[in-house]
Length: 447
Image 1 (tube, rainbow, N blue to C red):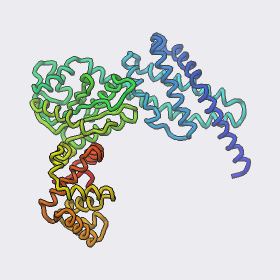
Image 2 (image 1 turned 90 degrees about the vertical axis):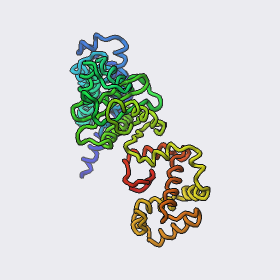
Image 3 (image 1 turned 30 degrees about the vertical axis):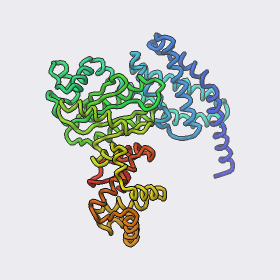
C-alpha cells in the first residue's frame, strides 16, 4: 500500500470519527428534528398527545445513541444494543398506532440522521468518503432495528387480541380450579390454545414473576406473557395470562415434543427477555394430564420458584431427578443425620478443589467401574484407587458398597443444596443441562 493511500485512509477515518462524535454531542437536538418531521409526515403521530411525543423523542434519542455507539466502535448491532425497542413497540401497539405508521417513523428517523451525517461531512473529499462509508452500516442498523420492532409489535398485537377476550382469563381460572371447560366460549378458547375439548393432553404449568425491579413492571409482565404465548412453535398459541403480579401459562406437549424440549424453549424466552432488560424467575411443573391435575401442577410451579436465583432463571422440574429434588427440599434434620466424618471430608475437599468429591461422582456414574471412572477423570487407575482409600480412611465408607456410596452421594447433594454454597445456582445449572440418566446423579457430575 502506498504512502499516499495510507494518508487518504487515515484522513477518512479521522473524518468519520469527527462526524460521529459531533452527532453524539448533538443527539437531543437531532431527536427534536426527527420528532417534528415525524409529526409533519405521519398524521397519526401528530394527532397524539404530549406524553406520546415525549415517549417517541426518548426512543429516538436511545436509537441515535445506540446507532452512534455501534458506528464509533465499528461493529455489528446486537439485540442487546436495542433492548429498549420491544417495550416501545408494545406501547405503540397499545396506543393504536398502525404498523405501517410505526415503521414509517423508523424511516423518518433514519432519513433525519443521514441528512445530519451529510451536513457534517462537509465539502472535502475525506468528509464525503467518510459519509459514504457510513451508508451501509446505517442501513444495516435500520433494517435490524425496524425488523425487531415490527416483530415485537406483531407479537404484542396478537397477544393483546387474545387477551382482549375475557374467555381467555376465565379459561385459566377454570383450569386452576381443577375443572374442565364446559361453557361454549371457554371450550372454544381451550381448543384455540391446543387444550382440546377434554383437556387430556399432556401439559405443563408455568408460573413466572419479575426478578428484581423493572422500570415499568406492567409493560415487562405483558411483554414476557406475549413471548411465552409463542413457545408452542406449531401455530398454536399457548394459554398465557398475566394474573395479578405473576404470569401463568399452560403449554401443551404437542406430538413429538417432550417436556425437556419445551423447557428449552422456555429457557430461551427467559434468556432473550433478559437481554432486553426483562428478568424473570420461572418455575415449571412436572408433566400432568387432565384438568384435575392442573391445580397441583400450578402449586409445583410456584413452589419451585424458591430455587431460582435472585437475578432470575428457570427452575424446571422435568429437568431434575427425584434425588436432586429431595436434596433441595431437605431440612437441617437431614443434614444432621450425615456422619460428621463425611461432612468434614466434603468441606475440606471443596476448599481444596473437590477432587475426592469428583471421584465419588465419577465412580457412581461409571457403575462402580474403577477404570472407566479414572478415564473420565483423566487420571491413572492407581490414582483413583488411592483416592478411594483416602475416602474410606476418612469416612469409614467404601465406594464399592452400594449403601455407603449412596450415603456419600446424598451427603454431597445436601451440601450442594446449602444456600451458602449457591444451591440455587446449582439447581439452575442442573435444570439447564437437562436431566441425567443416573439414578443417583448430583448437580455437578461431569456430563
